[in-house]
Image (cartoon, rainbow, N blue to C red; front, side):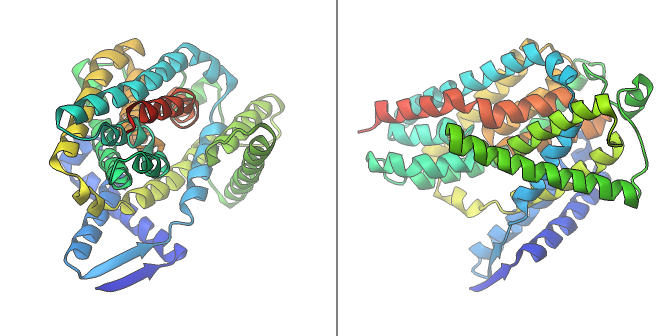
Length: 403
């Protein structure tokens, strides 16, 4: 079988081509438009399927270098931080705690479902935990970390099951999140408005931000600002890790630094930061980053899933759908922001924070109203605060049901 390795620049160029193709495909497909399927998911998912087919036919084994994936992700969350004021954070206070509580409850619930369903299908309970919060809310990182732990306790094939389950969750979260939000909005005929000023027209009217042209001078100023914030964010993460033992995802420090800069700049007006220009740069970074994530999926790992483990994951998805539609949506207020938050909850509850961001971005793009509340709450809870409960819960379940 021929092996082809693409360097970082070629991989990024391919991601851009796929993203453009996915956007064009979505524009011409009424079904994809109605379901609000994100263009990066369309493009990356299709490419990953093609790679799987070529590999399965022993024709080509394609290896991608996604070195630019993390910088693009951090750049996007930096633009999100530049759009978030302290007023928005205060406005989302109650919602944040409700959402965070739902994340914590889901981490425990997924493990309970995994253990119960695994025992019902005659599987090792540890494999059920691998198909629970480890691989779903935890994603690939937790799957790779806890799989060997479960194997050391006697669960044969736990790592493979965890990685395969994470792949299944990534696909399910990416495909289901936006249709769920669209169904909630259309079924309940929600008013398309954000709790804070969300659309650019309203933003200009309210005087909350500044609109400008993305010319070369503005682009240079924003690019410099974003890169400096990213460097400061990485530095902040390293300092917290060394001094306090706190490990943060790479984008969190940059997002916090960006929020601080935004609020200081609101008072001093030292920098001219047009909101529409920031949004444009953020959209580009997000699109390329998410396309890389999806095109790097290894579908052949799903072949390792037996029918019982697959059944456990299907049950997890069904419970997730019911919980999101009939419980969380109402708790979050039952409005447009709640629907966007639910699309994010489906994304990181089954896959990872990038899924959540893709889902929310597709919904906001479709309805032309951006929910800053959702874009601040979901990454903060889904990638940082959730671990306060999720990791101890996973550890407890593994030790409780280990041989």
